[in-house]
Image (tube, rainbow, N blue to C red; front, side, top):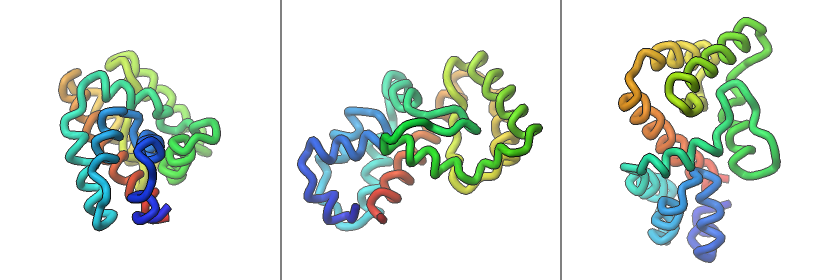
Length: 165
């Protein structure tokens, strides 16, 4: 969709489109209410501003719609399609990479209680594994802040992608 099309959506349609970028109702409503936007960058800036900060419940809501790194999102929903595209550069055909991702994801979830989240777009599996290993050493508060920051980045990138179609 174009920026003009997004600006003309009904509030309900805009909310649905935005929830595909980040499953956070308050955020989607705030970004939708800010329309019309003069540029895609203005919309992305508004998305980042509305997401800083997200509450713990909002982070949990957004995380609930993200698959594990190295696993492909299932279904036809817009957010699943976006996730598959974002992780397209993560080559899991190497058995060692797949094993390390599976083990790292498991260790991360046991330690922090939620999926490991990183902006995967533009990153290789090795870069992601390096970050996963490093972030396993964080305390819970630091890692929660990392997850929220990555969620904000992903939401803004998804919105930019959606409005640049």
